[in-house]
Amino acid sequence: MTLSLPDFPWDALVPFAKRARAHPDGIVDLSVGSPVDPTPALIRDALSAATDAHSYPQVIGSVPLREAIAHWFDRRRGVAGLTVDQVMPTIGSKELVAGLPLWLGIGAGDVVVVPRTAYPTYAIGAALVGATVVASDDPAEWPENTRLVWVNSPGNPDGRVLGVDELRAAVDRARELGAVIAGDECYAELAWDAPWAGSPTPSILDPAVTGGDTSGVLAVYSLSKQSNLAGYRAGFIAGCRDTVSGLVAIRKHLGLITPDPVQAAMLVALGDDEHVTQQRDRYRARRTVLHDALLAAGFRIDHSEAGLYLWVTRGDDSWSTITALADLGILAAPGSFYGPAGERHVRLAVTATDERVGEAAKRLRAASFA
Image (cartoon, rainbow, N blue to C red; front, top):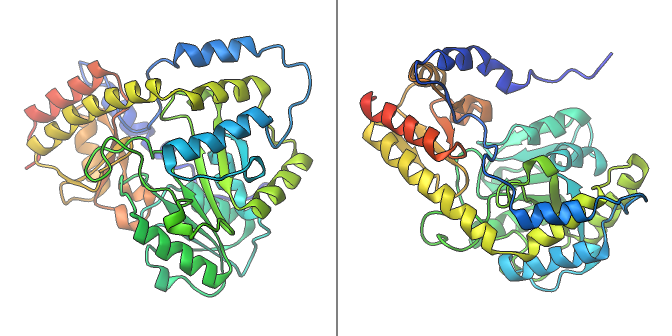
């Protein structure tokens, strides 16, 4: 017998993908934010040079990699002073998100708080341990038995960015409750609108948020988006020294180790900002094409000030919009995947090729949804 979990949401898109593929000019798949551009050569070269990986790597990660993570937080996130015992590489970020409630000892009777519009894996992690999920963006609503709080900025799916004041209020409330608070910040380098355009969005570890004390606070990050490393499974966490130490101890028993060649690639990726700038420019251009076509077609775009998605609505049930888009050969993700608050929205990724994004824009402009 296996644990009973909800059906994997994207399985429900199979018939709509078939419908979209029937379009005479082919499908434009904007349903998943999977990078399509090449992994930068300097990162691939670092991976190749490290393939003589004959010995077991450390769960906590190599010292050079952990130093690189700490330096990156200082340089790109405004978080100075992290030490090597406050950071740890992970096998991508999703396994950490799903496993964190278990590794924190959370169980039945405890609450895991997630955003109202949220990446489904936060709730899956709670379900794995029998905890109760409370979907709320208002710290005043978080109950006394809360043990873990997830905040996601920039948000998936809606691209919403939380400012320093909002993050500080969340951290303060989590501390009142004695809960760990984890900030999922995987899209932080992909900000499009003022006041964050051209610079990273605020981190939950920012001293203006934490008061210089990272106790009980974690930042979760992935290089999948900014460096096209989705296939490498290259993520990391940083923050509370005691929590990181506890996670390392548990992961030693489980053998959850980032492979040495991937660690070598991460080290190089974290030290080079130019490839991130180039990738951001690619996504900005695609986003502009798709953004303008959606507005021309009569959609309203909400939030979406950062990240890899446009969060749009025409006022209808999300599945109705998914059907209409599939008839145009465009596959998107229904907002209902992300909770009841998204039932009238759909999410479109800007990670398709220039040609496919241009094709989607052409179809949208020719078929008004006004």
